[in-house]
Length: 301
Image 1 (cartoon, helix red, strand yellow):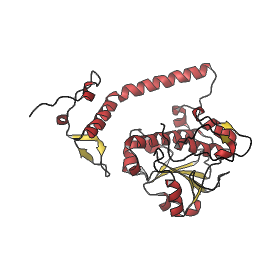
Image 2: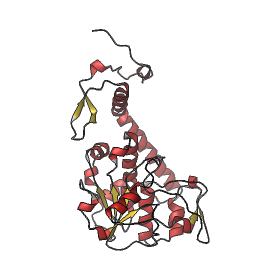
Image 3: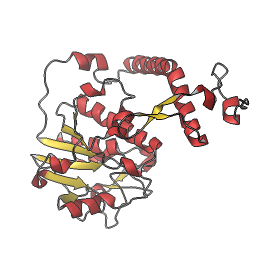
Image 4: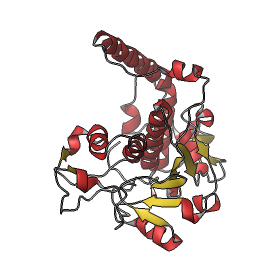
């Protein structure tokens, strides 16, 4: 058997990183099929690149998490010195035994779009869901939080976050139409002609779990109309003006709904939630122009 020369990518690897070749691999623990079964060893360059990326992640995961913990500890120290309240820590949250009263308003993140996204974009969706869980958990009046169409790809992606099974989130493999009556559902989509000024009790608002870089613009609106469920958009252009055409992440939409349901005004909520880079500023009157904002896609992480 002839020897293979390591690729340029391998030659640029870390000093202590073993120079893997295809002949070192029996199975690929990172790539799995729809049923969760491990795939045979990869042969193409793209498959090999993905596999090596996963190996490097596993090799350096402990060091990376240690550095993240050190940075978090430093931020907490600086916050204490500046008298900034960062809220309860994770340990404190875990020790809380009193169940909070949840609002009778629910959020559903629809994960039925796995087949439309690349792996890196699916990871972005999971990270945004993680942020939704975090802000909801820290809220005094959290929303009912459901994730539907939770398929094998999503399970594989979220399994990188240990303990997700214990989150205060309802994970469903079924689509939302199999779980809730149409009368209780509202799909949030910027293409809708309906403006939502307040959130109704005993209603579940759907956010599309899709990072698509505007490749599938209007998809959620089309789905809502085809399924015969209500749809609406947030009144963003009524309360803020934005300098550039931007999109909102899943977690931004989630936090906006959470804060408004908690009693905050729309202007206060939008100015707190929208990142500074979006250039949002308060407008006194209802804007006659339409701000192009999507609630199911984002090009940033």
